[in-house]
Image (cartoon, rainbow, N blue to C red):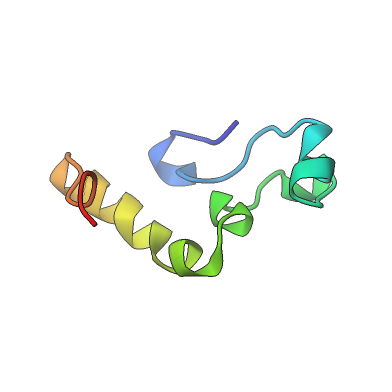
Length: 66
């Protein structure tokens, strides 16, 4: 589960034991980390910008685009 709170937006709040098998991380090591940690690098590097743009504009400027 990822936080939707503006101050903690994008931070992992809960993870189950499947994260060990799917991502190779112990669930306890994910808590408090940014969700970017689980993304491929090209997406992880720009994910915070997407979140900030969404917060500032109140709408997505990148969905449904190539």
